[in-house]
Image 1 (cartoon, rainbow, N blue to C red):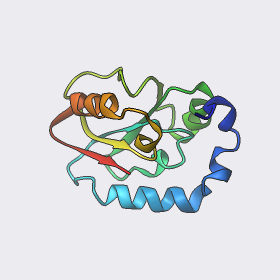
Image 2 (cartoon, helix red, strand yellow; image 1 turned 45 degrees about the vertical axis):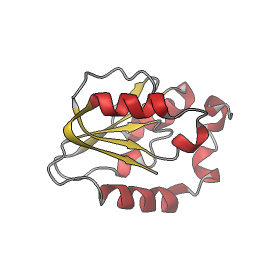
Image 3 (cartoon, one colour; image 1 turned 120 degrees about the vertical axis):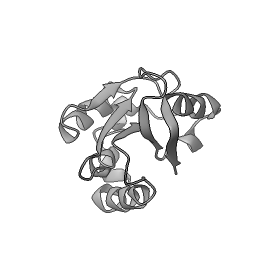
Length: 131
């Protein structure tokens, strides 16, 4: 597993940068219901995708465990970046309209705890979008 604190400095440049982030965000936003107001992006990394998961009335919040990633994400997300573990989210149950999990699940030995936490924080009828 990568050390994401160290990787944060080069992460965007080595992962497709703005073009890849823009494409991912456009695809994800196409799946977000127009009535959604709250979006939580798990393992948001540097926030390069997360900052694009917005539209009028929808403001994303990013969460990541790596302090280095959060330092990069915080200015991109106007401070809406939270340190936390996607397996134990620091959010109330049934409090979020949309949870996004972009480029994470394939890296985990067991994705079930992340999926369970996403389900816990989603409001009834909420949407989980993952890549």
